[in-house]
Length: 235
Image (cartoon, rainbow, N blue to C red; front, top):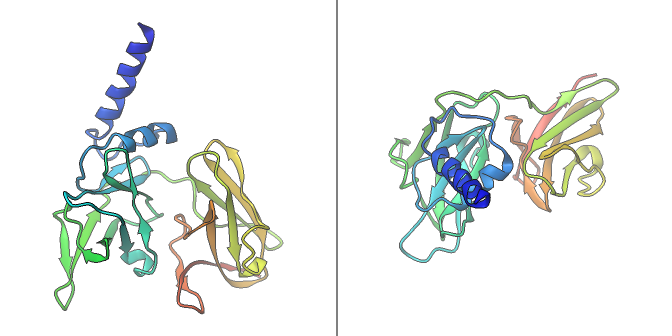
C-alpha cells in the first residue's frame, strides 16, 4: 500500500512540476530527470529551477534536433536528447545575467524557428529567430571562474552525479585528461587550475563531449574559429 501511495505522490509532483510558475527553483537532478522522461508533447520553452527546457517533436520520423544561441554567437550546436515518449528535449542552464534567449533550431538538417515558441524576431534579411525572455532570473551561486591568488582559478559545474568531467585549455596545452573535476557534492563539480597572467581560452569535457562553460558569458573564438570560453588572469 505504501509503495502505491509513494509512486502516486511522485507522479503527482512530476505532473504538477510543468504547471508551476516558471520561477520555481531548487528541484533535484533526479526529479528533473524523471520529469523530462515523462514529457509527452513538445511545448514552448519553460524555466524550471535554474534551467530552461526546450522541446521539439514531429509527426514525421526524426533523427536529430539541435539548437544554436545568439549569446554564443551561434557557434555551438546543442543536441537535444529524445525521451522515452519520442520528444526531443534540451536542458540548458541559464547563464549568469542572461535575460533573453535568441535561437534557431535544426531538425534533420533543416534550420527554422522553434515551432513551439510563438515569440519571434526577424533580422534585416527576414530570417526568423525564436526568443524566450527569462521573466525572473533564478538565484545563482556559480560564476566562473573564481580568481584566486598565485594564478589559481576555480571552476564549478552543476549537473547530475557520476560524470567524468575535465577542463581543457591553453593553460594545460588543451590536455583533455590532466585537470579533472571532483564531485564535491551530489551533482556539484569543482576543479582548480593555475594560469599565467593574461587571457586564456578553455572548454569543459563532460563524458568526453565538449561543453562551453554555462556559467561564463565570455565566449570567444579559437584559431580554428570554434567557440571557446575565456577569462582573464590578472597579474
